[in-house]
Image (cartoon, rainbow, N blue to C red; front, top):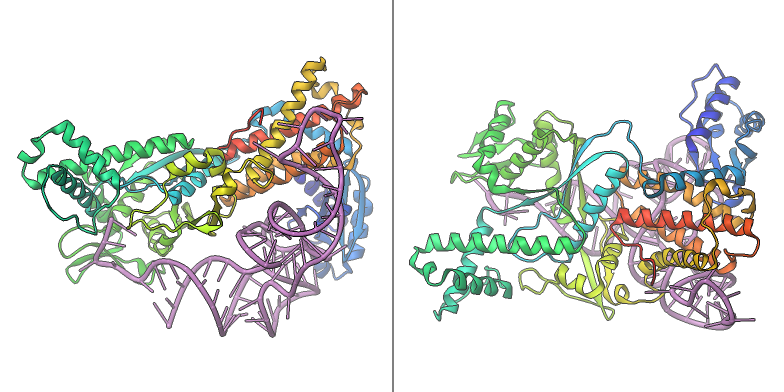
Length: 548
RNA sequence: GCGCCUGUAGCUCAGCUGGAUAGAGCAGCGGACUUCUAAUCCGCAGGUCAGGGGUUCGAAUCCCUUCAGGCGUACCA
C-alpha cells in the first residue's frame, strides 16, 4: 500500500517538476488519526531545491493527487504535510490477503533471498541452561522465524565448546565427586563446578563403569569423566530447549575444528593474507588494522591456541559453508569482542556487515518484588528449567521478547505466572481465545463462516473497524521491519496494540448481531484479527490457545 | 585512562532510523458484568525526553560536551 502511494506521488512529482531530481519519497503513518491514513513530507524536502514555500508545493501536489482514485481525501496540513485518507473499501480489500494467505499472511518472497545462519545459546556444556541463555534462545529462535518469514533461508546453529580448559575442569569435577562417593576424603576446589548435578553425573557414571574408572590412570579417568559429563549435560540442554520450542539445525563442535585441522588452516589463511604475524614468541592477529584497540594473540608462547583462534576458525568455516549472512547472538558482556571478530571477517575478504552481532543483556529476576540474586560461581543461578516449570514456555517467551534484547530485562516471575489482566501474555492470547469463542457461538447458532467474497465491506462503518483493518494491513510490514532490524520486540508491541484494539471493539460492539449482512462482515473481520494474532504469536514461538 | 551501551510519566519500557500537541503497560483515583469469556473495557491524573551547546524549515531521534549508571578493556573461556 505504501509502495502504491509512493509510486503515485513520484509520478505526480515528475509531471509537475520535471526539471528537478525528486528525492526519495517517504510515506509515513501520521502521528494522529485525524491526519488521515498516510502522510508524506516531500513538499518540505523540496522547498529548498525549488526555492518555494513548502505549502505551495504541497497544494499543487495535493490538487493533482486528489484525482487518484485510491484516495478518498488528500489534504495539506501543518508546515507542508500532505495527508492521505483511503476509503474504508480500500482497507477492506486488504482483508482479502489475510484470507487468501491464511497462515502465511505476513510471510513473503524475498527479492534477494539469502542464506543466513543464526548462531545462538552456544552455552558451554558444563551445566544447565540458566535464564540468560533462555533469553538468548527466545531471541535467536524468533529472529530465525522472522528471517524465514521474509523469505530467507535460515539455519540455526549451536556452537559447543567441548574442548579446552573448562572441559578439563568439568572432567576433574566429576572425577573428584566420584572419588568422594567412593569414600575418599578429598577437598573439592572452589574453582570447580559446584552444582549438585555434578554429583549426580558422578553417581551415574559409577553405576555404569563400576570400579573400572579407578583402574585407569588419573588423566584418562578425568578425560572419560569430562566426556561423559559433557554429553549428559548436552542432552539435558537439548531437552530444555526442546521444551522451550527451540529447534537447532546444527550442533557444531569446537573439537571438530581441531580434528579437521581448521584452526591451523584458518590461521594460515590469514597469515597468507598478511594479517597474522609472529611476535614475542606468540602469534598475533593484527586486528588494529581494522580499528581494534590492540592486536590479539591466537597462538600463545606455550604453543596452545587461544579461544579467539577457535572463533576465527569457526567463522572461517561458517563462511566457507556459503552463508551470505551470519548472525551471532552473544551475551552483552562480550561486546568488546565485536571489533576483532569483524576484523577477522574483513581480513578474510568479506564485508564486515556480513557478520551481525545481536547482544543480549542481563535478565533480572524478580520474585515478590525482590531481585533474585544469581551467581554462576556460587551455583545459585536460576535455570531455564525452573522458569519453564514455574511460568511455562509461553509466558517465558513473551517476557524474554518484550524488550529490546540489548537492554536489561526485569522479569517479574509472579506477574508471568499470574492468570490475570496484568499479565501481558494473556492479554494477547485472550484476544485470540475470545474470537475462537465467537466462532464457537456462531457454530452453535448455525451462522455460516463468511468468506471475503460473501461479505459486504461497506457494513464496516465504525472507526474502530477501520482502525482494525488498517492495523491488519500493516502486519506484513511490521514483520519485515522486525526481521530487518533484528528486533522481535517490535512484533510484541504490535500484537499488544492489535489485541488492545480488538478488546476495545469487543467490549463495545457485538459481532453476531441479527442483521446477517452486518454480522458476517464483523465476523469476517474478527476472524482476520484472529489469523494475524495467531501468525504473530507463531513468529514469537508462542501458542495461540482456543480457550482460556 | 580508553572504548561500547544506557538515561523518556511514580515504576517497567515503546517511539517506526529527522516530522505535526512525546505514547503504552503497571501502580494511583473513579466507573462498567440480565450481552459472543470482566484474563476485558471506559474515564481522570501524571513529562524541563539527564543538563548544556550545535546542525535545519523541524531534534527524544544526528553531532559536540558535561553529569549519572552498566559493561568491556588477558598470551581467560
